[in-house]
Amino acid sequence: MKAGKTQNQALQSLKNFLDVCVETFSSEDFIREDPIQIPRLFQLKEDREISGFLTALISWGQRKSILRSAYRLMDLMDFAPFQFITKKHPKVWRKLGGFVHRTFNSDDLMFILAGLRYIYHEKGGLEDIFVYHLKRTGNLLDAISGVRAEFLKIPHLARSRKHLADPKAGSHAKRILLFLRWMIRRDVHQIDLGIWSRIPPSALYCPLDVHTGRAARALGLLNRKTDGRRAVEELTERLRILCPEDPVRYDIALFHLGRPENRVLLAHAPLFPSGDV
Image (tube, rainbow, N blue to C red; front, top):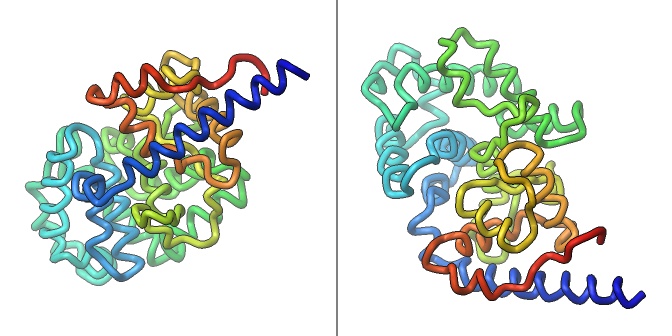
């Protein structure tokens, strides 16, 4: 009983600490620096979905670079991505021919746009296709693999497949999980958009990047040394103990705690209790 009580106290201390960090780091400054600002440019649901999906796919590297590339892409699409993809003739897409972000080039972009066109014309849109595969698989990570398979029905170069994560093959799917966080969560700080109502926040998995992983391991929330699907599952299972209805609410806190400027704060944080809880 005493050990159980001690574990519960440790869990509560960590939860209280992370809750304070969520309040501290969920600010307008975060939005101004983060790729989430791209889908926030739009009001139409489909524009938010498409701009968010494309932005998430190129969300690696420095955030300033991501934002420059994402703004350029939206400009090339006349700041109307849904109309550009579903109404414009694919010949018009040639204007995107010079787009490059790191290893994501115009061939990859054309494949993704053709996949989105297919999904909106034939499958009801991004929300519908994710809901369908979630119901089919019962797991959002496996649903990501199902949506990936839908995209791969479109003719493509083999090189383009790497830009669509496959959790069934062990990928941590960080960028797609980030996109799903934006679409599904509706938080009081109005950072995430929460425009999808048919998938509950409890189904989400935490995006795992360098900063998040560093903080999660330091706090005892993640023991695995490498970032992959099993690490995402381990981290999210422990976050669900802290907040079953919305485990990914702690993503922003972990991201900031893992940044070098917050190493002292992280070093003095409460730890997730070892052993079964």
